[in-house]
Amino acid sequence: MTKRAGDDDASAFAEAVRGAKPLAPEERARVPLRPPSASTGRARGGDTDARILSSSDEALETSTSFTIAAVGEAIEGRATGVDVKLLRRLKAGEVRVEARLDLHGRKRDDALGALARFVADARAQGRRCVLVVHGRGAHSADDAPVLKPLVWRWLAASSLAASAVLAFASARPAQGGVGATLVLLRQTRG
Image (cartoon, rainbow, N blue to C red; front, side, top):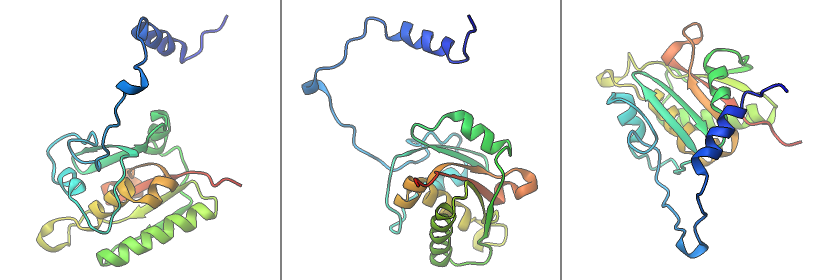
């Protein structure tokens, strides 16, 4: 008999929950939804990008459908229920980029509109992986990035991203590094 990769995990889980009893319906409580942030979205470290990512933006709808980790200038996120292996494949460059959007030089509102149209169009065309180039913010006022955290917040919190995006991560160095974000899109049902 061949042992499958998930057998150890399944056995460990079964052992951990042995003897557990489900709560009665009247004992269950709904946990209030909060937007992802450095403290609630699993962002690690005290870096500026994580703080910017957690700031509120009136143009964005909030959702907690992504697990986010920001480390230094890099970020990664995956939708609830998405296998971490898929995120690893995206970060490793194993998924071919099929479309690119360059946001350099755009104002916030124009960049958000372009990003939303780009993601919607790419998904409608059946594209799986896209690259959003936003820059590192080296030429922004006060040397603080504007577009990078804006893109990250949109990916983590917009209703369109929640329905269209499986995972996202800072790009590999050859693709723009932390000045670009890889986005893995859900397949359209057809």
